[in-house]
Length: 355
Image (cartoon, rainbow, N blue to C red):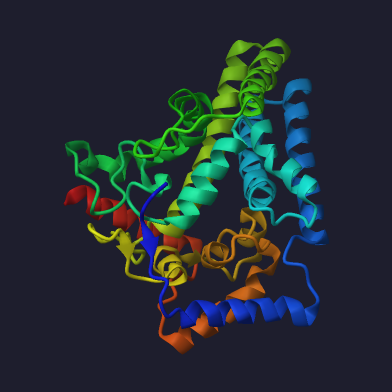
């Protein structure tokens, strides 16, 4: 376990904010998990993905339209990840644990491994957001995400090749990184080695065999190896680009910080909630379309402060967080549009690549 910890003395901001959020749900007699709108959206997303998959394999469709539909299928996969898997993985999709587990395992249906994801995302990323060596999500091969990472000669060109790495991120995740974690037993290069229960070994191999059957064998039999390969690449790049960009816009932009723990004590000066606010930024919270597709991950600040609360409540929680930040003089990071956030990310990686 990491010895890094946060300031636990005198936390008026955190106690005040938690009280206000708890009172919000208590006075309105609301559950902090998902509601009917989330369940309907989930059905729509799953049916869209299944319908596109069947149509691409069974109907005679022009090549240009097939390519377009493959790209849409990749976006649908990403949306399932944002809205269903992510919520289930945080136990916020439903009040029932078994429904959350089913939701979380949609990641395995897309070729990933929820067992690894929970360790890498729920523990490492959410606890130690933007802390080098502990948050493995900012350890991206061939990319320099913050100033404390060593600069290599090729980083000078990362402003030109970033889109390639983001595009292949989902394919690399499913076909390489999961196997890297499986055989090394580590979630990251500096993480401790952990053994897997027998059940997880079986699920891992069942997932990978099932992925190969659904996304390679069946398509090759149905449409031939070349169309199947091209379609798989389009789906994978479309999905990967969506997943990578959403993360970067929330944590790797100009104003977000990358705190360093004290070398002797291992302490990070800020209390945990203030740390989350300094390392996370919202974007396009006024867009219902963005919020619908991203499962509220444009409200990334609220998600990091209250990861067990469903995204359907973030617009209301957002007001409480902003008011409390203003009261205590805590900086709240936000970009008005997705375009502004994206431009900030590109400027950030450009400057890191230059020096």
